[in-house]
Length: 511
Image 1 (cartoon, rainbow, N blue to C red):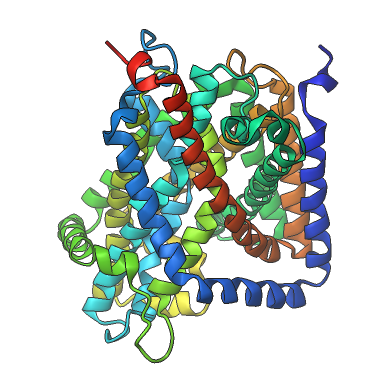
Image 2: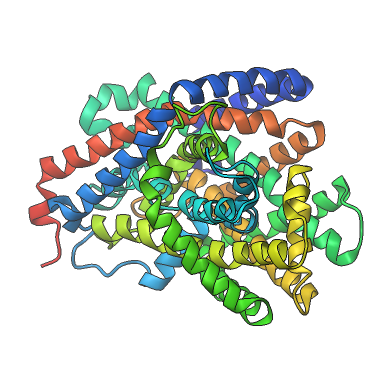
């Protein structure tokens, strides 16, 4: 088969052209575009705040039902076959994919947004507001978000590893519900194109927004100004790393980087505890977990409907975060399905529920605790720095207060860079697997295709960074969550229907 036959241009080209067609006019008229898009997004958020909150709860319930019902024991693959990865490797890959470098930014700084704009009745900057801040940071990376990420994986994993369908696509998973005519026709193509649009736009945004996590720390460490040239150099190094990892594949690339980063992140965390205010961090972590558990239902469902002055940051940001997470649900679900051969449905869902949640809470406790300590005891006006829109600049300022601050900043950059790399190489791998015409139940996606997709995402991101088109594309990416939510529920239904048709809970289980 020639290389041209390795990619399905009927879904890839339309998706790419739509992303470009959306980006160019928005970049040319950035201010007006942002105003229009934000008004649309805000009106949706205002009208469906309750819906997004219940959406997260419903998916958690659905995940628990699939895990602990008869469907949970269904093996994704041959019941006699061992899982593709050990539990540590499997968890590390899901953590790297699920959290990425975003946890390093939110873990250290998310509490400041809540402290500046706390829930109704709480004074800004007060001890209670600070406790709300770290507890909310933990809540953001909790069960609802990871339920959003993983709940299409049972359907995708089942068609790939049990039914051995050659194409790892949403249209294929819907075949049992809507029939061959839909899956092979225009309906299936629309579903597949929607998937690719959400992933390509989301990947470009991630590349554009992820680079400052490294550039701000590098500029502080080297005492140089932040320029587009510096951003370009960081991005090129990063792209080289994730292209290399994507080319190497899951075993030699993504798995090794993910497991290595768990050790490096652990080393960074221990360094901060032992070199910094370790006792305060551990106490504050305990307080944050206690506060989170006490207020979990409030955080999950409260809309501030009877309070004057509108929603606080907690309510508005939760809805935005869930909406934005929905755009990534397809990517996370498809990738989780691909790496879950040999795992049961229960193992896949509960690992995604628990492993990233645990790590995110630990990271938030350590990074957030360090920031809070500096704010309370070292007269570092972090809240003012963040209010002045210098969020990224606050990170190296906080880290530099530690003994051997340069080492902490260096470690932070390395961990962030590897997290960014694993997120985007997982993305390129998944897009390549999704668009490939190879039999994905037997083969890996073509290496050449992975590099091509990495290059396309990079070019789109760099052009948009240069001409100012990333903020509008970020809002568009958030809007893409609406059709994705519908597809999520369709695929949960499809998974149950397929397992019932095959009576997989009787025949495809470990004896």
